[in-house]
Amino acid sequence: MATVTDHYEDLLADQYTWMLGGDIASLAQEQAALLRGLGLSPGGPVGDTAIDLGCGPGAQSLALARLGFRSVSAVDTSKKLLEELIGHAGQDSPIRPVHADIRTALPHIAAAGTVAAVVCMGDTLPHLPAASDVTALLGDVRSALAPGGHLVITYRDLTRPLEGTGRFLPVRSAEDRLLTCFLEYVDEDTVMVHDLLHTRVDGEWTLRTSSYPKLRIGADWLAGQCRSAGLEVAHDAAGARGMHVLHARKP
Image (cartoon, rainbow, N blue to C red; front, side, top):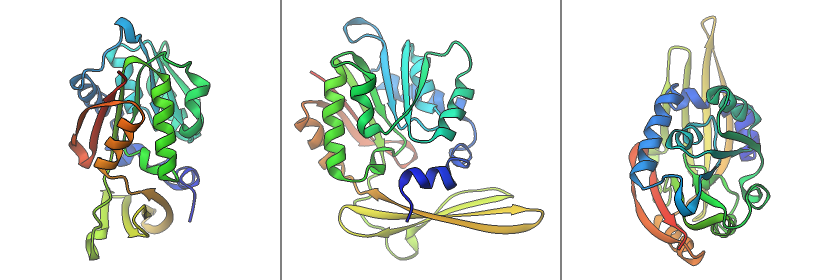
């Protein structure tokens, strides 16, 4: 079993944009529409600083820049994905890549009460090692946010186990690549994700595999943790692409 960081560096980082459909610009536009619909906008008392935790190749960071945030810190543990983000952002971008663990990054990159928006999207939160890390992170988010500031989380609720062959999930396929994942439910808190990547070169298929743990985060539990951290939940519902969307604000 690999750590989440190793899993991405060794297998998924090179495939991640392809997994998402290959068009980061279109995905950024979609994410900007989602954030705009939730009421995220820079300016006024909250300011124009945003933080993207687990930014990957940058769809959400680009969306925040599109909405007009003038400072966007994009945090990820994958150097490969941060380098890709830099390429997507181009020159004169407000996006600043930060190579760091999202569990410890916030106090180092933002003074208390200064951030207008924190997003942790694309199923990033379940990559944390333990439920206690989620609780601690929400405390850091509340500290970093300005009064009235926003938190948006999108994630997959894996609390209801799939059974039998339903645990085999096709991710994406092409003439030269096929990615499938298999879910193994370890206990009430954890599911093991086994990724199987088939690639074809010169007519020959090869298989690479890697496994990593994900947290089984329930919607009611996460909303309760936000409230316990002192955040007001404004929206909590199923969204597009199989993601659950939670939007909270600091009073």
